[in-house]
Image (cartoon, rainbow, N blue to C red; front, side):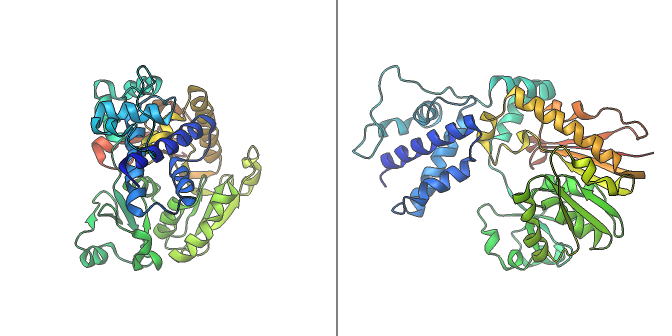
Length: 382
């Protein structure tokens, strides 16, 4: 593909990404994969170059652009003027530039979201947002059921210790993790440092009854299982059948036997968990959220969020906190986690719970901590 043809492909993909963000469609990575699945002529260098163009444009546009062409024109004018010469360059490139055609303004986030984050960060908001749109590192968690972190670090001098976690390592960017023997035999799992910190906050112990209330595909569930040394009872819940189904194969690879998956019916979660009410030693609530702390990985997600959706998410988060609290025995621990930096999903959820200790919480951000953004809170039943 010529440079102009690559630009034209990036515009087509961006058109699809913008439409998906508007209509709650597929993620940008999925859109990208689908596009090239039907274009086998494109080599790996072409795909990499187009991907770089797509994500550079996504990161450049704070507001959702009107089109992929507008996004790339705006990105070019703000960050890469040489791209402008490719418009109208040859039969496979994009059409020539026209006077007065739309172009996206450079920005860090939609104005309403930037305002919401300014409530938290004040004059530091631009630094925090800039870090949120950078490149994410590649972190792994060493599976304590099968391996020792110090041994793996000694065997791989370019794997850096993550000192704030018990089992975390950071690999060189671009490492093909899923091809490593350590991954194939279950000694390591891909997991961001912040996510590992959140799971460790539960302080799960062997022999306990622990519930992962929003387990998804089970990343934090597997961390809890390793901490419990497969002793006790670990219940992994979710309302998404497809995501929860991924836990079984992952658990077998990790040697985390005995995890109890429990599919919940939306709106009837309390009924499905009635047998555990008042019995649990710990409950982890990794609640559905805006994902604003993970924009490094999914930068187009800031185009998806609306004030109305944020309100719905906040209501769900409050319901989950109350549900989780009802499952705990006296002394039982409740940990609430969101990969969000928005106050409405953080401190805004820490309502008083009758019969519980006051909440304590911490905030992790890419700018200050180098990991994904997380709000982590904990309390315990008296």
